[in-house]
Length: 372
Image 1: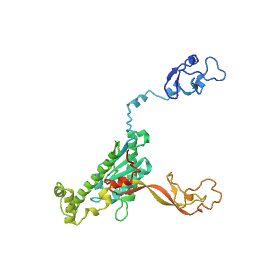
Image 2: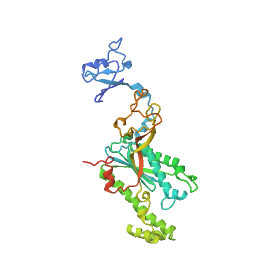
Image 3: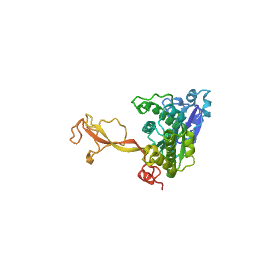
Image 4: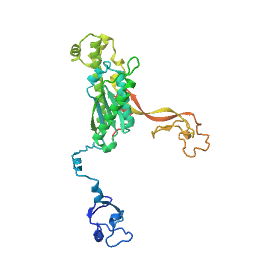
């Protein structure tokens, strides 16, 4: 027996080999394709395809060959469930450090902020964006990072489990690999990683530009609130001689302006002068930058970067694109081998802008276009 289907899968029949030719009187069934040495009952098992009266071709698949690859245990696949993210929505993957209070204490993170640890988080996030090009923006603060995928993303057919596990594992792997580079002691020696870090993650979809803007504003507001509290708390503990319980009691009923007053009046600290990375968190965006490239022996830039958006920079439009063909023939316009030229490249940049302000969103409408 064979399964016979048309290209649009609108008709599907299981036909016995000996009598297939007898069904040719109907327009809804196929007729046999002529083959050499044919009789009334042709060897359709060896026929590559059959033809519909309408002229379209259909696939012919042997039931025997399809069942041979199966086993009686394959039924367990029916227990698997694929959850697909809603189409045409912004997808946000947010990961958080698991047990990072204990982790930061075991590794002697500076209080209230450790610039080394935050830079390490940023570096791991940059590696994620370099790997997954559907991510248009990343935002990180403390031990968490959010990644925003473009609305048209089709990565793994938007299967949530695939996306979530791939990003969390890739971020964690880069965090461990980059640890010696960023977590160094004052003497310049890498701090020993005492035990592996853990990150969990979640996926959320947002249908509108306003939703995604409010989400990112929420995370940056959270960064400001937490960092202002922590800055006051550790000043009171480390420099003010207060116990953690006493410091928490002092700050428990204070507003933002009162915390600012405590920092300035008691410790001479103007919170607005604290590093922007501490106060606002880190924003990761793709930016066009100029990089140096050395022209190779054929007069073409020796470039291993696969970024398709790259293009040489020149005041002369005729030099904007170097022809690849006929590279052996002399060309006075082509830079000589060994020449260093400037080319445009898309690179992930780390900035510390105000995400809540209108300015950021008006300057980045190419990433988050306005909705009609």
